Image: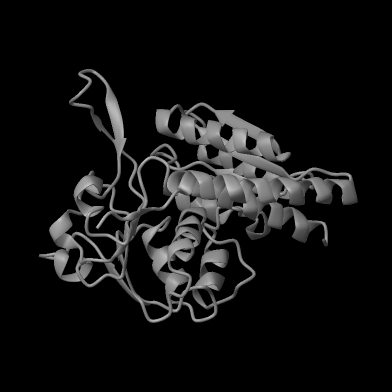
Length: 296
Ligand code: GUN
């Protein structure tokens, strides 16, 4: 059996096209453009690429972006005062601080200082907490939000399905599990979060009707770890040496795609799966912030 390839690139393009139309009519109505502030500290090459892609998506959709680029030597206080200014700037609807931050800066302190109404990444504990208790009018963290959207394309009714998340990060694993266990969303799953402390992870992964791999280990999920007919969402973005092209690197996921695709009902590729969805959902959250802040 060859799995359905879940085309995140196309799905994200469709979502962006819909948002572009929404934005055009919002701008027409109120004469202002949505604005996203993107804060990047230091010169982490992966973060630079992510930020460039986020800024490009804003330009494509008619969202203004304000890039705040600072050297890694910035102090925590300086960064906190940048955020305080963005929080009170009425022209800024959404704020994103690209992670990771340099080690000398307390990431939590920075994220907690953000106005939850502008937290389009959905990382502020106020938004996470409200999401966890089932509120639906919150900013959902963009990567799990995008994963949920992809799952719904191949499995419109997930009620009672067993979703297994490998990885417990605050950005993906924990919010993913919380979103999918909710009764009042397109979710209602039985959920397991598992991680590397398990002596044998396949005990859990083999039970999955939907498997979300977000552990950050290249090709960690192998064919014997999944059951036939599983829906696989691969959040991994691992850069490894490309053996076919010495001196070059390539991007692979947390799933051994070539082997797992023969057992799966549906699977996301890397690249072209979850990655583009994260940005599309960030744009969606930004438009939502703009609407709310303008009473629209
Ligand atoms: N670093 C890795 N993923 C993300 C994300 O979704 N948002 C931010 N701000 N930083 C990240």
